[in-house]
Amino acid sequence: MQDILEELKKYLGWLPDLGIKHVILSKKMEEKLKHIKETELQRIKDELGECHRCPLCENRHHIVFGEGPADACLVIVGEAPGEEEDLQGKPFVGAAGELLTKMLKAIELSREDVYITNIVKCRPPKNRNPHPKEIEKCKPFLLKQLRIIHPKVICTLGSIATQTLLNTKTSISLLRGKIHFWKNIKLIPTFHPAYLLRNPRQKKLVWEDLKLLKGIIEGKV
Image (tube, rainbow, N blue to C red):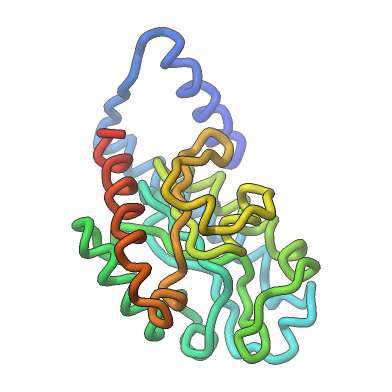
């Protein structure tokens, strides 16, 4: 199935060179493609298994793989699960998650419209930043998720998510507000909701990022 997806991506990648900007799939084809993606995501989840690839496994309650539609046009990538996420096994369900839901609602999206995941799948002790070696072990699974979903746009929340996908050490303050690219997919960095809870004045900047994100989803940017 992964081979089918890769061949389809290669085919679609040639279409702009032929002057074809939009491809309309039949409802049946859309459902079939979504089923293939769902199957591939489950395969990656099974491959991750009860992961013991890094020390984060020692104190976790649940692996937080990610959730959302396999054909989502937007993938949101955070840093790592927090306490509530670790207990429930779902991404962004704590106070930061509530704010994220409001951020999505502001651009007329719901959590059910987007796929949400993190750089690492297990909670770091006391919510510390994940260490480079922990990111290194978990990153391949995230990259596989992104390649399979192949969204229209990726939104990274916070420095670690942004720096990891863009392979840079530049601060989030300098990266946000602009369109970047990951594997030819547009990427919009913004501040993490947890940071906004501590620094509510920065919400004005995030609103600018959200408007940019909305413009990309609607095909206006």
